[in-house]
Image 1 (cartoon, rainbow, N blue to C red):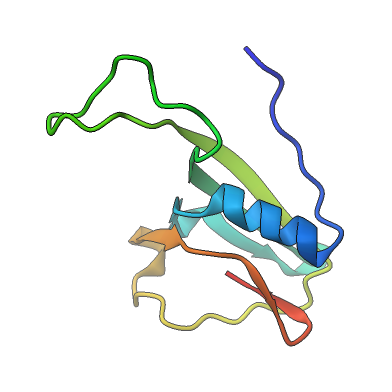
Image 2 (cartoon, helix red, strand yellow; image 1 turned 180 degrees about the vertical axis):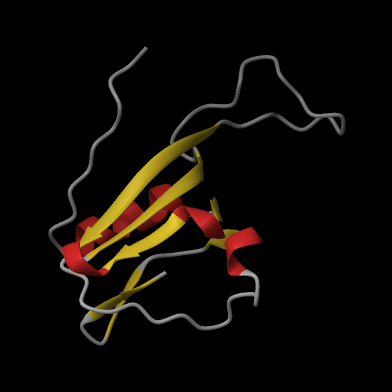
Length: 110
């Protein structure tokens, strides 16, 4: 098994790479945590592996190729506050689709 991929984001360009790797990730609402005392926002995502080839010879019932997904942990350090908007009332039970990670007004938006 290959070594796990570890990335450190230190610029807007790095964040664009991370955003592309996490595009279309599924995040269970219960797997997002803000650790206020540590100033850390942590999530676990089921990442769609855009960077990996399809599973050889595997096709879905409709005949489409089967792509890989992989669990990954993501943490943002130095987080002083978290705001939510547009999340379902029962966020903990929801499965959320991550479209992009961008910088907005000195912060990061998921």
